[in-house]
Length: 97
Image (cartoon, helix red, strand yellow):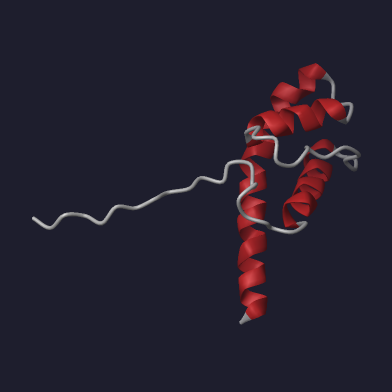
């Protein structure tokens, strides 16, 4: 049996290790407007180490979404944000080729 090479896996949970420009901010704006129905005024702070669901929850509350709607909207945003980020990456990859 061959010994496996050691590997290091980094999980950039709050995007402090990899700079993605303004793409994530734009996706937050678009997703918030689509789900909530009005433009976002306050985006999540960067580099806080907060997980995406907690950042989205705070963003909803900071932008005047009532507590009773946060529990309804949070799962929708948590599901849609990564899909939009992935779609943005695919679009970016295809325009670079």
